[in-house]
Amino acid sequence: MKKLRKVLALCVTLAIFCYWKFRPDPFISPSVLHALQYQLRHQMEKRDNFTIPLEDQLTKEMMMPLEFAKEPHLDPRQASDTNLKKILMWNEFYGMTHMEVGLGQEPFIRAGCPINTCWLSANRSLFKYTELDAVIWYAGSSDTSFPEYRSPHTRYIFFLLEPPGILQQLWISLPPYTNIFNWTLTYRLDSDIPIPYGHVMKLRERDKNWINLDFSAGKSKMVAWFVSNCNTQSGRHRVVNTLQQYIEVDIYGKCGTLSCGTHHRNWKCYEMLDKHYKFYLAFENNLCLDYVTEKLFNILE
Image (cartoon, rainbow, N blue to C red; front, side):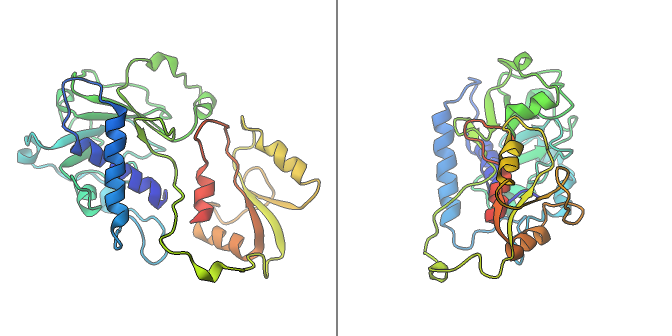
């Protein structure tokens, strides 16, 4: 599952939909959204006991409750409530429709969102299209359709976590979608709703145990790299090939000769890295403004 910061950002994003009173004007100032997002994040980060319900408190691994992946029944009286903000995840995100947050209203409540009168749905027939407050459209999906009808008050959200180069590999062209969307939900910091893979934050207190700590002590291997996409726009493989001329680099995944279990993105692999390797390589597949690979945040966590 994706890490804590991404889930927090998604929660804040969806809470903004609920917090803001949608106006007939289909465009809202990005500065207003940024201010709301900052206020909500600041409130959540101040809470010493802040807990996202998808976080395992023992391992810190993201474990979304399975019941959140299935959309619950919506009571007709609740559906008719004008205060309920109706958000439709139109197409699949990496084969999922719950955005790794969960469907229905319960994820908002359990996450402690300041405003939780929201319903995230993946059921296209649950609400009339004219009733929708927001439609989230994932650009990397093979389903490139749109709702048959569109109300002037419905916000269309362009959702993408990866850089545009990924879409080119999927033979997806963006120009046909010009002037369709009201908001952007991407890794770009100038998006209407920025949602990078993670954030680096200053600790409240400095960990004195790290002073003069030798992180290489007891480690016998130099560098490891986990990679599955071998030919990328960034040319990262050329950097590694050059590096291998001077030091040993162990490559795990489809582009190397080593493997770590059935999937290299699991905690056992990170524990192996921490125990045996002095360095880990985290390279972006595309060199784009503001884009930072999730691999960096994975290893930091």
